[in-house]
Length: 400
Image (tube, rainbow, N blue to C red):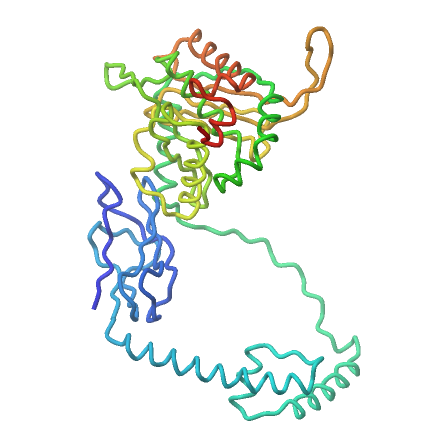
């Protein structure tokens, strides 16, 4: 008998909520099969089976349990029986398939599903009898009149549903309210011409995908730009700790990702030391882990700055909310062709609004505006984003 025990999702977490059971009670589960999603106030994770066997579920969905609690047992004593049964089923399936193939030759226009084949084998039927019954049934159906059809259903009455808020959602709600109440949050805006970056992306997208098996997006360029700008505006890369201001010599940039469980912010640690290709690959990996519910607490901690992209949902402009205890967050938005004046001429350019929300207690207006202008300059001149002594191609494709 194997106990399924709640592991510790991270330091300071003592309780978790049982999310969704991915298997049924008394079901046979395989080793490493995903069993259940659990949620803490910081992240969600999935517990898998350590051994094969029949599972006995001891905790219900929505139940709050202590870390270290036993939430299920796996009886692995009947593994040999299960294996033998599987072999018998495979042998039977092969016999059924052979018989169905012979029948198929007689009736080339008649298709049998696997379920129909097994029923025919079990009940000792033959296709000739079945076809005769189908013909008779078809004639009966044709004879039905419209008056015998069921009456049209009236639309359902208006209903409302109620579901319990998850631990993760409750914690997120508390943090958002705290930010509004405990910070002097302001937002400054700018706009960036995406023409050069879009041309670069179009030129290297296929090579990048072939080289790294990851699509090249815009987020990696903005992450790199933010890493550079943070080193030039250290107050943006700072936090308030009681009566102290703590500044960081490194950039740990969080990327906000929308998941079925709510908003999560995986952190790219030391992004200032990474190339654009390394950042893009890491973002892709973290986004997948977050959406699959496999992200860990270590993936979410120690961020010093955050970027969020409402543009993927069509947002033209917004005021992003700070991710505490950080002091600022960069908001990207939808790219829209707009008329702008270029050297006295009105031209259409792909433009994106940028927003920087910041805590005015620690960041002055001069730094916030300067930081956003530096992001604009780097994105409009992406050659400035490349690592020293590297070309765009070598930096994107990791070529020497």
